[in-house]
Length: 188
Image (cartoon, rainbow, N blue to C red; front, side):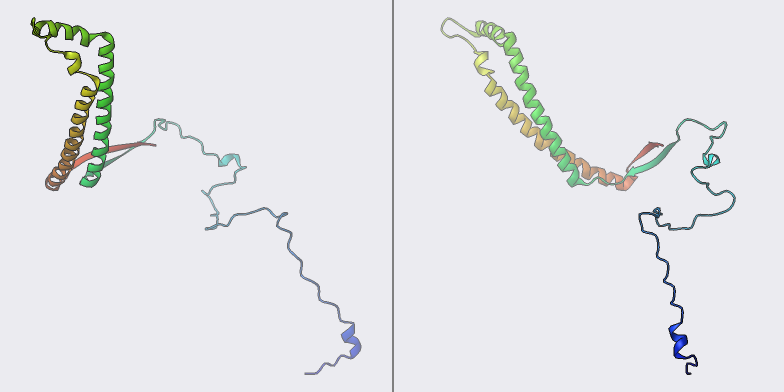
C-alpha cells in the first residue's frame, strides 16, 4: 500500500494525545488486597458507618459465658521427663530441708533449749568422776547440717528412682486400662 496523501498531509497530522498518568500514591487511599470479593445482596454485612450494621442483642439471650469441656486421657508418661522433673523437685525439697533444719536449730539454740536439756541430761548421766553426756557438743550446728545433708541426698536419689519407676508402672497399667481420664474446661 502506498500513501496517497501528500507530504503536506503528513506534516499536518495531529499529534497523538499522551495517556493520562495516575495520581501519585500519596493522594490515593490505601486499600488492602482482598482475598475474596465482598458479597452483595440481602443478609450481608453493611458498612461501618451504617447504624443498622451494629449487632443488637437478642432478647432472652443468656448472659452467662458458655463453657467448653474436653475429655482427655493421659495414655503415657515419658519416664525420662518424669525423672528430670522429679530430680529437680527432690533437689528443691532437699535444699528446703537443709535450710529448715538450720533455721530450727538456730531458733532452738536462741531459746536456750539445748543448754537446758543438756544440763538436765548431764546431771542425770553424770557421776562424781565424769560430767555425763554433753548434748550441746553432740547436737552442734555442723553435725546437724551434715546429718541433714546426708538425708537430703538419700531423699534425692530415692525420690528420683521411685518417680521414674512409677512412670514405668503407670505406662504398663495404662496399656491395660487406658490411662487416667481428665475433663478440662475452658471459659469463653
